[in-house]
Image: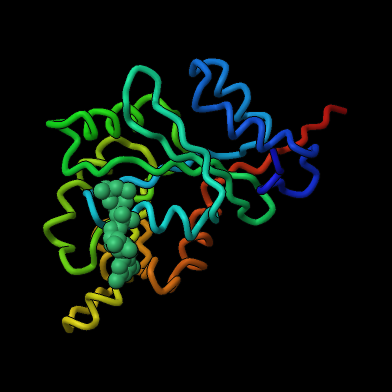
Length: 208
Ligand SMILES: Nc1nc2c(ncn2[C@@H]2O[C@H](COP(=O)(O)OP(=O)(O)OP(=O)(O)O)[C@@H](O)[C@H]2O)c(=O)[nH]1
Ligand SMILES: [Mg+2]
């Protein structure tokens, strides 16, 4: 097995091994493994077909670990990315319309939201249908998990004459907002800059 994603200082192959096994291990052990290398866990959530998986691939690169979530047939996509020198676990989730689950996919995404000790949720929405998709944003805000709103597909929206005002949305919602196009790799730097705020910095304490 090759080591694809090692950050500086990662013992060779350790991270790939952790990433490969984490989906297969019971949660307790999985978290122990992940914590050895990852300084934050971030999930991409949102309705079906808003571009979560494409954004996941753009953010993490091609080498993704796929496993079935324990007790389900649903595939979980996890990978690492490095933000400001820190290692972050990114999780791609199946599409969900609401936090009141109607399908196995929605139930899974809801479970993940409440059970994974997430440091951040990136709520991905379609720039062409912002107002319709904000319903889930409000539900996510109520969970108290930190949210960044990623308004994807601005390339398609612009073609339709739809312009999303990032600053105005931020002020109205009270959460960070990024407009982007995963397909054109636009806005990715702004997104990772906003993700940085949710990545833990290990601190040293001294006693005198
Ligand atoms: N034009 C354009 N197309 C995009 C963009 N992002 C994603 N797509 C396309 O939209 C389609 C759906 O993207 P996915 O990444 O599969 O969407 P998803 O949210 O993961 O969908 P589910 O897994 O079904 O919930 C694909 O054909 C992508 O190539 C974008 O920014 N612009
Ligand atoms: Mg997907």
